[in-house]
Image 1 (cartoon, one colour):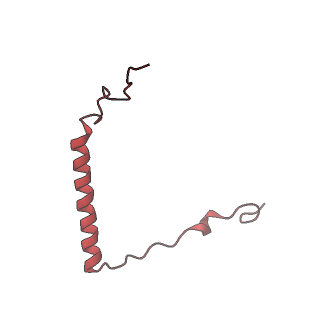
Image 2 (cartoon, one colour):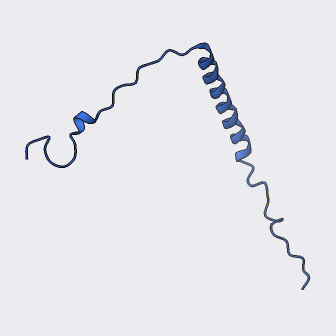
Image 3 (cartoon, helix red, strand yellow):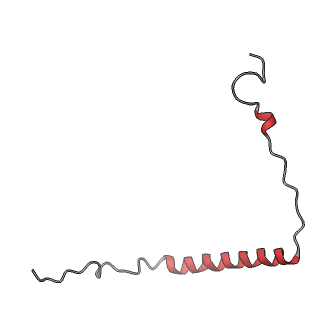
Length: 68
């Protein structure tokens, strides 16, 4: 079969147009900066809490009353 005929579509024609770089106003710039700062803070907190292990040490667990 010649190219372009048959099942499926030609991938050359399936390309999406490139996104136009839009200009950001002051609010959007401030919002993005705040998002990045929050992300950094979250990652730092995660590092601090990461090495300590589980909050529940396992000795607590499900306790049985001992009565029968």
